[in-house]
Length: 228
Length: 53
Image (cartoon, rainbow over all chains, first blue to last red; front, side):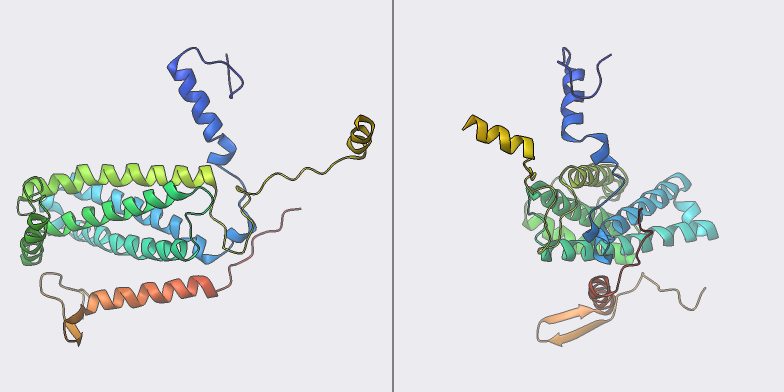
């Protein structure tokens, strides 16, 4: 059986595997070491954002399974509801600090433009997901947010297919469509970070972009002199 | 109910900084927190891990 990238694929699955393994070999996908400059608190916030996202997703799944009656009346339901709300606050807090850190070190350097773009799209998709969450809490606050937002969405021409005053539509946007979108774009973002490596500080050498240095051996020097 | 619990079913308090510029107190707290966190992340020393032999 063929393995790695040292084979000629005869099927589309083989070609896809060869492309995947050559683009993102296992040692890059799950590395054991990182460059020294990663030992800084500013590099922690990407992972903190992902941890918060996991808590958001788990608590949100529990809320969906338990149902409104459960999370509005029981102590555990209240706790899970609060956990969902506050983990979203932390998610955005960590994501914005991560965004600041990457912006000020020009994280799009070294062919990392797509990594930067996917991060930005993940931020926008997260805003949409949080916004739809605020519109489905069925209180005066959510009613106010929905009716203010309705004018905004109408003014940009998308009010016809995203009706924020339609509770059923907003629930489905919030628990299915947008979370899938956020998850997919965050997964792509993380894979791109693995492919291109963590961006170095401005004054550090980028191990991904640095050209391999070849030190000529004595035998090679002699061979070159003989050849000339 | 816990005395620290915050009711989200009421309008937030707003601070009118100048003319049309105003900010809600929850948003202001959030902005101050993320600014402090950002500078702390840059300035605080990172704990050193075990040296590899």
